[in-house]
View 1 (cartoon, rainbow, N blue to C red):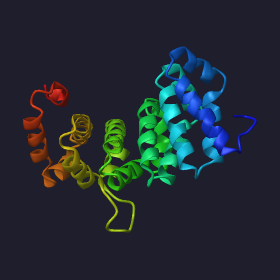
View 2: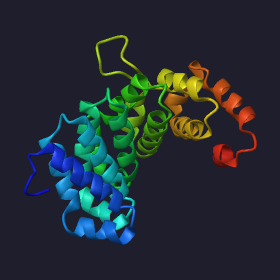
View 3: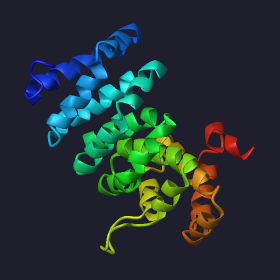
Length: 239
């Protein structure tokens, strides 16, 4: 990767191999010790507009950072910034949206990641990704999982979820976007679980509760409870 860092097809083949090898815990650590995370980030920076390469790089980062020691390395290299940039650049690509959100689920376990996350308006880009790919269950699930994490951890993210920074009145905002996603995926338990967790995290903010009530989110939750009444995962937090 170092020798051919400006050749995206070589980088793509190398990152695909890293992704395959990283499923093994020992191999994953060796890859990172040999500079694998740095090589992946360099590949992303040199081929910012190559959607396929960015998607595979994000998946490789996700796989590598499942390991807590590898996650520390990714945090030191500011990997979250490159993933947020990939999402911003390639919102129209469902593969990049799915992979970037998967990577962020791991990377955001590092509390130091929120400054670049907010600086690059990643909350807004995640909402936009859901709006653009509402029918794609994996995109919706992964983006909602990230949004639930950041809403819980960071008040700025929670309030950004409600609004649009665009002057365009048609720009997506969080609550209606997620409610439409639920309408399309109401029979998919994994997607619904991610949506419920996001809504529950939002409900911890008193002011946001007013927006949730105005959007009649309570009716959606009642419907989910009836539909998944035997699924303890959804409602364990209510105990």
